Image (tube, rainbow, N blue to C red; front, side, top):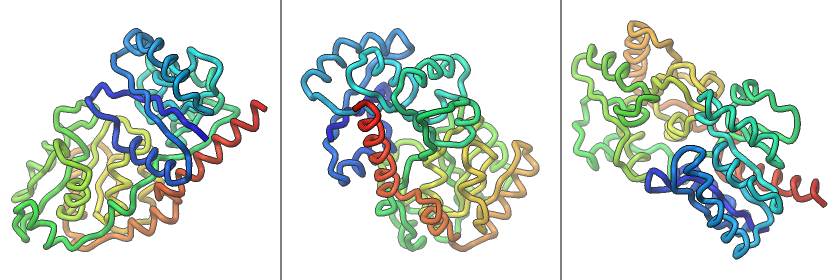
Amino acid sequence: MKVLIVCSKNSGKIAPFIVEQVDALITEGLVCEYFTIQGKGIGGYLKNRKLLIRKIREFQPDIIHAHYGLSGLLANTQRKVPVVTTYHGSDINMQLVFILSRINMFLSAFNIFVSQKNIDKSNQKRNFALIPCGVDTNLFYPMDKSEVRKHFGFDVNEKIILFAGAFNNKVKNGELAQKTVAVLPDVQLIELKGYTRNEVALLMNAVDACLMTSFTEGSPQFIKEAMACNCPIVSVSVGDVPEVIEGVEGCYLSSYNELELIEKIKTALNFEKQTNGRYRIAELGLDSKLVATKIYEKYKFVQNEIK
């Protein structure tokens, strides 16, 4: 089966969770190629239509898999190749984009949502599935903290927290994270910015806790990857985080209240051992290979539907 992956490259690169999902699909025996979109907004996306049609003519895919609603809308401007669209959260949570995503849900042969909250909001009734993006558990796994700290030059005794993104990313709500951690003496907060994927895996093993204060999320990879590394977590109740960390000792939910957040961070820092988050990831079937198998099954379903 040949699959054309349609996604944005406006940040200068394809989102790592898309690349890792495609790599896992290739191990399933699928032939995958990318069509990357340059341009912002509905007008910027639609300007890519001629190039997309040319790519379809050259590659002749059996399925187009679009990531995010606007990419799906572009993919559905042609009606010869069936489109599967994955919605990752911002295309559901942002009202103006959600309107366009709703149109795309009607046009797509199949719709994949990464969280139950997104399904509930979309009110989709047919040809859809809940399939969160998986975690590359060969990359994200528990390591010896003292060893990985040497890589970054961290002192073995310093308290370090990894924030779930760049401080200047407004959706990630870095202001709240910085304000709360600033109250804690001798605790360093690191923004997740400018690191390679390998370095992110090392960081999650080097820090004492991971922190998420986002206003909105779908199914955040940051949380699942930290879980796969058995890192303690403090997060606001956003996306599917409550379901993913449920029952895992050392992982805590908080409101946006600063005092509560401070107390949860203190509790996580005092945990001082690895969680069993990796077991929870396995329990939920969130390994990238298992997720790829589920997606492949949906591709085959779509093919059978159009015969």
